[in-house]
Amino acid sequence: MSGERLAIMGGRVIDPANGVDALVSVYIAGDLIVAVGDKPEGFATDQEIDAEGQIVCPGFVDLCARLREPGQEYKATIASETAAAAAAGVTTLCCPPDTRRVIDTPALVNLLRERADSVGKARVIPIGALTRGLQGKELSSMMALKAAGCVAVGNAYAPVENLLVLRRALEYAANCGLLVIVRPEEPALRNRGCVHDGAVGSRLGLPVIPVSAETVAVAQTLVLAGQTGAKVHFGQLSSARAVAMIAEAQSQGVAVSADVAVHQLHLTESAVDGFDANAHVSPPFRSQADRDCLREGLAKGVLGAICSDHQPHDPNAKLDAFPATEPGISSLETMLPLSLQLVEAGVLDLSSVIARLAHGPAVIMGLGAGTLSPGARADVCLFDTRLEWVVAGTDWLSRGINTPFYGSKFKGRVTRTLLSGRTVHCR
Image 1 (cartoon, rainbow, N blue to C red):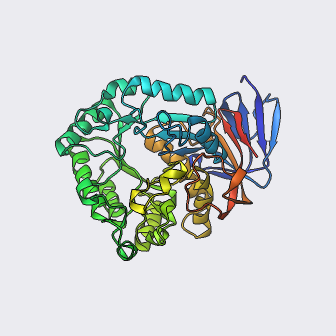
Image 2 (cartoon, rainbow, N blue to C red):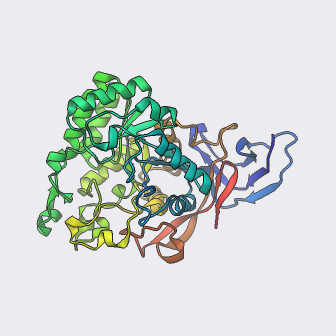
Image 3 (cartoon, rainbow, N blue to C red):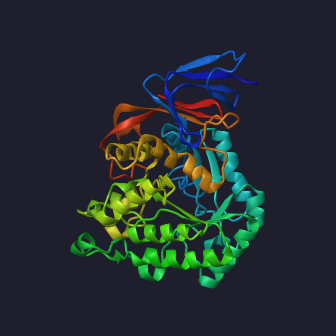
């Protein structure tokens, strides 16, 4: 054992991957976990961290967080958003390929990783583009992207030209051993909509997005996933019917997984009432029945991960008429407290919430993260469920303040985050 030796003492350690939920200590040497529980023989501690009254768990893995760099640094940067991630207990961020310089070459993959490494606040995993330039026509050089470090590819919000292109992309990805991440939406059915096709959208006279825009895309992709044998992950589902379709496919042995954005587990179509542009998201907030089924799907494990779907914007992006504003919420720093509200509501127990934030997404992406197993990287989050705070001012680190929760009081706060054994956030 080499490097600085740490002992995290007195906390409630929750490591769902190993079935641990106990008042024990965690021992770290250098960048690795060496033990959970009994102190290793001959272990001399350089620093002891008092975690009494706090939860000690693996660092969170976020499957969808936009950092805006390169190309949109006026909105946010890798430095600003990874600092926000560290404050949120997130140690691994998966970055979608729709940066302004699309992540479709090894050079862009290397650039993102190097910039994240130089900042040193969080580990960034670039998701490669499924098609060149996200144009939906020609397949990207997936094998080269994999060699550069990509473990998954996707087309973000951009549609593929047709189902033949999608089929070939799935076949190529399967041959490369890459996960394909799909944000399911049929563009013809979306038809420039911006809110859910429900009572609120109709009353406000806003163009709507029907549930079928999501479910048709899910159905098409499921058929092709079964035919090609590709491993497919559906990102940021919003509807009850889509969850049911994923559950049925999983029961039939299709290699599919899915996640949900944390705000979709709380807000419904009523959030856009009053034309609140901070509640303009894609996919849109849907009915309360949809929200309740998303919660049920999460509890049953059909949805294996909670993500932030973090999208920081500059103030001007939310100042136009509602349909012309840019969709998305700055949501890294509200991910934990909103997830803890699921415990209070009886949707999940605390261990299951941590599993959906850490081990579940790590398994989906095939990453060696989300666990406190001896020999694993020492990515650790400490948080206090009793701490109250307000989403505002100096308590907010993301450059984007575009959140419908701004000014709200939350309970539950990260007190310390360790990345490979090094403290990157301490409150």
